[in-house]
Image (cartoon, rainbow, N blue to C red; front, side, top):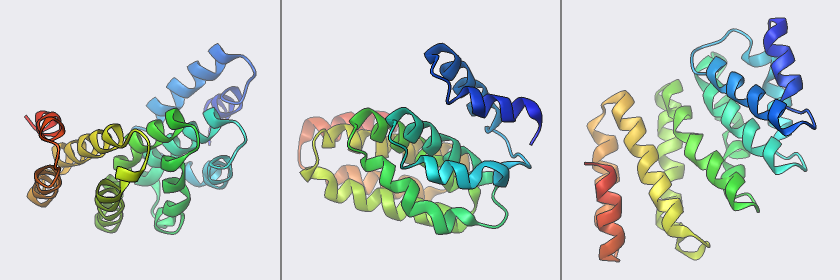
Length: 181
């Protein structure tokens, strides 16, 4: 890992909120493409998923989701449940930021895509007992759309439309369908 990236990770834990945010933006941009330093930070990010600071948990989840494509050892298959746990964080904003980035894990390969699809479909079908479940469902449908747009696999679209079709509330069915237009 080069010194600039190392420094950005250090800044991301600064007490200065502006410095944290700037580092966050740089690191998200840096992890948009494959990198050769994912394992230099991987274990720390896994540890940060349970940090006492909810901002650190959310950032760690987002970085890991982005780094999944830089994971030739397929560690994500082993660590995904830890990442997924943050999508159910006690702080809804943390959970939501994590959930909104989880689709990127599916870009890492067929096994990762199937894992992400399985978890998202299950969550969509069972989240009605959760607070803000309509937002969770909306985020999942949006994730499926992003995954479909990137991979162009009809099975992803079919899954999303099937989930939408099974929603009982007409107004939410309409809202979720609008994501696919």
